[in-house]
Image 1 (tube, one colour):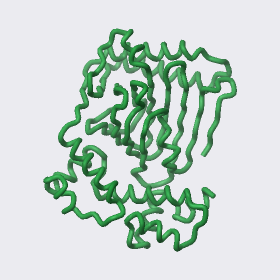
Image 2 (cartoon, helix red, strand yellow):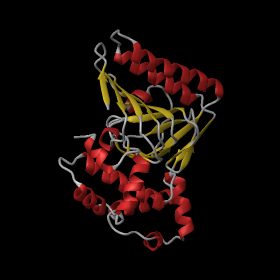
Image 3 (cartoon, rainbow, N blue to C red):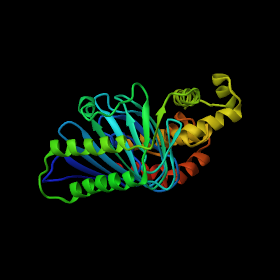
Length: 314
């Protein structure tokens, strides 16, 4: 992991992660309460830029692996999210979100986002009262996805990327209030030029998928069978798998395995002393009964053995 602070602009921070660390990733959008989990196998890598402005926050990130992010945005700010570049559409609260789409979320807005590998994103947090001055209508209770025409996309994306490039390369101090107002005006103009928008309401299927998600988190150390999920929801196995994959990008059992592996990794990274017995105990406490299977799946996901995770963090 590498963290740098710009000497000329101390409110600019950059962070590079060369391995998966749930605690570090929880802070990728300042002020938000998020859990980011790696979904596909292999070495994890991410880059983040954080800019603290006068009345808001600007963040940008890149993930080498596909991820599932779940939680809520800051209670202090409204948030714009923008997908700069992605090989395929993600799933946001059960709806598709494509490259160059813009998300607008209220304070404390929910974020359940399955993001493809090799994706670049950014977020801009701002005060509600400042955006109201632009004359753009804000959502009442739902988040909104704005879809832009090609001309607006080209102009908006080019200007936003230029801002990040300038921030990372300049050695001159910048006026944070001026920059805040400039970015706010860019988003206001883009929102005003939208060709279509979608209100992300909490549908029945979204609530159902969330219910399953919460159940598996509460009972992750216990054996969970499909009958538990069908009894919980009153839905068939096929419906459960379809709905869960729609919202979170993977089937319930695949997610449960990934969640358990992340729990083990987090525990290993916090261990002061470790031996084979410790590893076995931690794995069993998190729902793994067969150590051969556990070790194999752990290495497939994180590209290292459980003991190596501990060695790399002592």
